[in-house]
Length: 411
Image 1 (cartoon, rainbow, N blue to C red):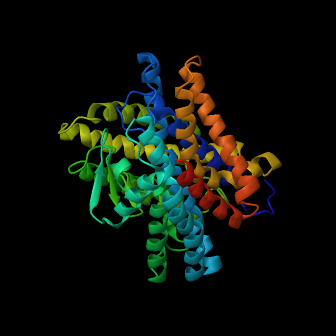
Image 2 (image 1 turned 90 degrees about the vertical axis):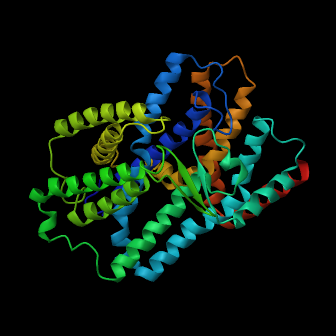
Image 3 (image 1 turned 30 degrees about the vertical axis):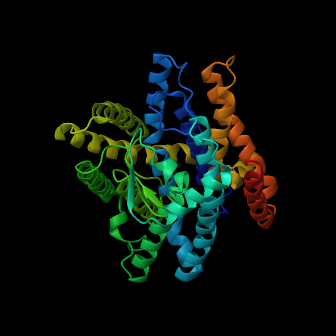
């Protein structure tokens, strides 16, 4: 990296890598045996060995991909507020996150719902307009809905689906602006709290908070359960505190000068060893309580602890790897990083669309299908982002509305 350039390019590149993992994670769900919960199910030909491998791979990825995105967001929030001021900062975030959240939830997410209804043979000659109107009508139902495993709440109610990340991040930004405005922010970087000797206590505090929060949530909610608070707020109770603490850890990392002036303490081999141990513990305890109602409290506590430690360790370690190997601003990396946000926004529709198309192709092994769905989704969304959305955002909004019109006219 050019030392005169203050931008940390590795965070941009890491964000792209994480979003590709998100696409892969969502691509996998059609090919694993998790019931009928995914919009398109194509797991009939998945053998037990492949199913086992894919589920463990998903558990590995699921432990760090979204926490990493919240950590990166937290890292930049303090500097952005100081640069723009609290009001302008919120206005920019509401524009960048809020507008896509609303427009895509109304005009794009219903495409996913319709594909799901079609793939599950639940349409019963229902037109797209009828399905869309039924979907929009539920947006005015402000009761709390719950989605767990084989439930069909997502098909029956208005929700942001994968755009939950945008609404939750907006909430975190608003909370931090309030903290900042009340002058309750973390102290500036010369404070002793950022001293090397305080690193371990600070990390342990974060881990203990996460462990307690997850253990408490598991007393009332099952692992992986979703709550939908109409119309745009959706989250998993067992993870929401994780995300907020990682967001706060990102703020702490920025103020401590991590990655810019110094690296967080600890030898690399120790971090790798801790990651390996906690990953095994996370998967083992997760398997012990997943889809098991009233599992023993000791197992829930063990899972909460290992999940917290694995989450924290993986976010810090993979950020360190990215700092070492992805701190580049060449044309290739810059193109990918600049379009990663829109790839995230668009990917879900194309994932389920390609999954549906490949379900009718029986001559391709499912592992190959998985690779094709992932790569075709990333490439398609990249092209749309680079050549349509980023070149002319207004045109992309018009095209979104035209998509709706076409769906209404022909389906």
